[in-house]
Length: 336
Image (tube, rainbow, N blue to C red; front, side, top):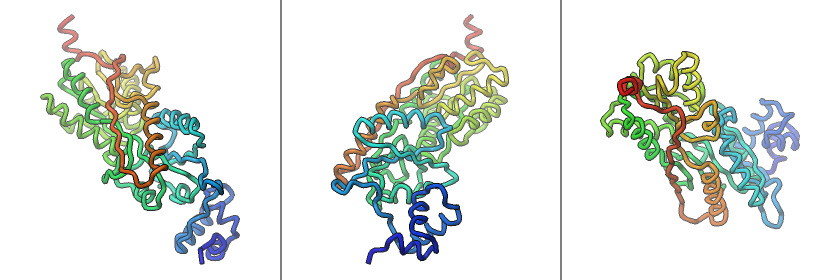
């Protein structure tokens, strides 16, 4: 006999409606009750009924997007074109936030209420892609990969991007280059750190540990990283993403350091905010609209054929020159 929500309710000592609300993470259920219900569901092996699905098509018309906290401006920038493309195809978007310190509740995205999932954030060793694959939930990775890349993904060629930026900086005469990297736990953070270090070494410029700083992909990482690196007086700083770069620019302003007169700062991602007049950040990236359309296309193909071969689409980024790069100050002065 199949396990039902009534069985979970009896084991947890709550009502059946409370079970439904707890497993859907709805309001009105205390944290202790929610935890008790989920423990009961796990112990019984209960999988919630596929709520909201059409009886004729067995589809819900809903696609989940797993995103980091929206205070990071990269995620609203990628979620908007994802939402628009899904809407064009007749799907509703359900946003699930991964706060990092609070893992995504698996029940929220495997309860059958979603037709597919787009993962815009995940760590290299995250179990979420594996669990989605094991449960038969169609999904695609966007701008992220796992340590075992056996899943559909649309990613940026990070190595190509950091090589182009390295050539730009060294071509302008920079030899004392610093870097503020993102986390190695994210595929983008690791690829950009190792790629940039190898690129500058290959081009004849070293990257000593004293000229590096790392942390989350956050404004605060850039702010703190610049304060630390500026004591070493680099002439240029590579930032692991644009959010870090904006933090570095803010720290520079607080120290009355002029960009690019005193130091060059470059980023990665080319998010829309980077083009604002107050920033005009030189950066590298791909079209987020194109990336979103590609990722949605991969997901639609996976939803249509769960047995198809895995596809990994790699997009080559382009450098966008704006106002935060220049030649080293001593070279500029000697040629004036």
